[in-house]
Length: 163
Image 1: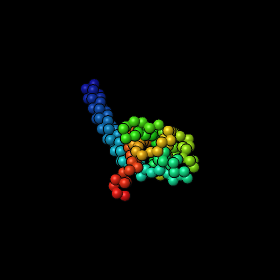
Image 2 (image 1 turned 135 degrees about the vertical axis):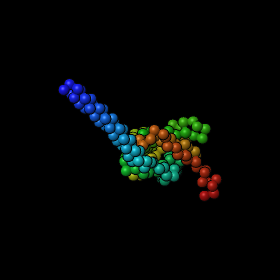
Image 3 (image 1 turned 120 degrees about the vertical axis):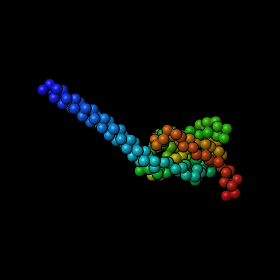
Image 4 (image 1 turned 45 degrees about the vertical axis):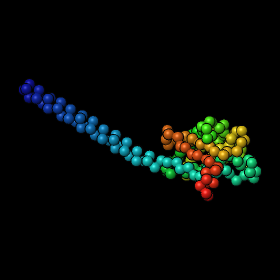
């Protein structure tokens, strides 16, 4: 009788090991499928930058130290602009303030806060020194990616192209 009990316990132990291996393989495949679905869902998470221009303000000299940057969210999920840095043609930082609202003179309202982006929104960037923007390289940080988006404003680029 002890031989049959021993062989039965061996059979049960083998079956348990087989079930454990099957469970591990199924869990791994489930993880890979979940990652694939998640990567697919994130593939449309893009922020598209429009053409950077000076806003139309009443006082032209005030408009030249402000840039307006149209942003469009291609995703169904809300994105957040978390940081923005501005550099000149030499790569030196330009002290500036940014937000999604300005007053009539181009002064940024609630500067440097997070800006939520569901469909489309315009970001305004104002130089702190009041000098006009002729060239600027903007680096955006947002919630969709750890990589920064780069946008370039060159006032004379359209003239060079013949537009």
